[in-house]
Amino acid sequence: MKWAIAAPFFDIDNIDTANWLEPFVPGDEHRFQLIPRQKPLPKWHDRKSKFTPIDDWLVYMRQAADALNSDADGIITVFPQVASAVGLQQKLRFSHKPVVAWLFNVGTCRPGLRQKLAQISLNQVDYFVVHTRKEIEIYSQWLGIPADRFEFVPYQVPDIAIDYEEDYQAPFIASLGSAHRDFSTLFNAVQTLNIKTVVATGETAVEGMTIPQQVELPFGISKAECLRLAQQARLNIVPLQPKEGVTAAGQVTLVESMMMGRPLIVTNAYGVEDYIIHGETGWLVEPNSVESMTEAIDRLWHDDALRQRLGENARAHALEHFSDPCAGRHLERILTQISQAKKPSATTALRWAE
Image (cartoon, rainbow, N blue to C red; front, side):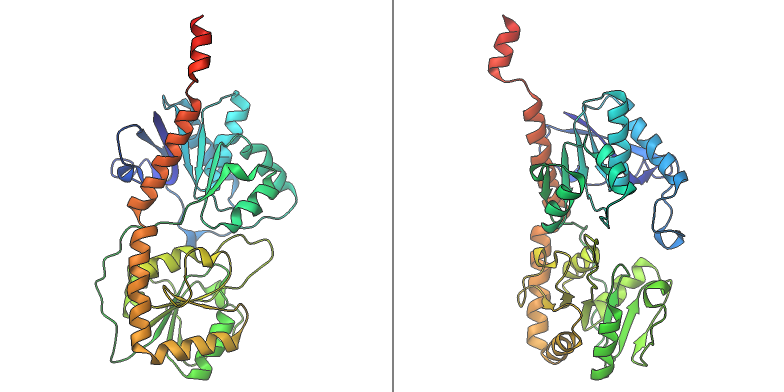
């Protein structure tokens, strides 16, 4: 079966060298065609609004049309905007190509016009792949779509080269990312413990906060610099702030940290328990608790053996469950299920022959 893959990180400038999970799909039952955007996806830090602008929706609609116009038997989308654009055009065209919506993370689910539009466009999607188990119930209720059309597959990242050693001369904590972060709790904890902490985030994530003298904020650094900080830090921390209507946050940062074998402290929110086994592959702390965060940092900061065990276990777990090859196997299984469901049964074939 041939599948068109429409992802926002495919564009006309990089399409000749781009790839996603298709190189990791085992077997030869499925073939793939990459469908590019006509314009490169704007960088996240350059966006002026958290909502997708109209101009960008027009680009998504063009990409969706190109996918539907291809000779592919089915479509795989990456991110919800592409899935919505494909689903809407499926409805308008009365098209019945199967659609798999991968990395379906809406971000926030609130009632109103956005919900109505999502229900209209996404009810054409056959299969949704989400990256926390909690999202299955959230999206099923929000969209009015049966839960059996959703499946949890862990978020995956490519293997990350470990190019830097921990900085033993000037040890520090690293905290990366900006989405729904609870830096207030982290700042209180590191100020109490007087531990140097480097926070690589956006300016809006710490706007209005009093920054302790223990905290450095290198705004605007590159992805490569972020990975360097994560590898050189004694501890990686992902402090999360639970918010009503928010579906997921922090998975990218924590999976990358685990892939690099870093000892990790994470707030137990947004389905983190699907990734971290407390005390084995990382350390979970209670939401909004300065006491829980402080105790966790103090314990791990001073226990070399525990940090080493958590880091080694984290990398082994990530390679087994959060790698590209693992996700490729999940994708192959899902596509095979769909292709087999589309085949006429022996009884139907016999009836046609008669």
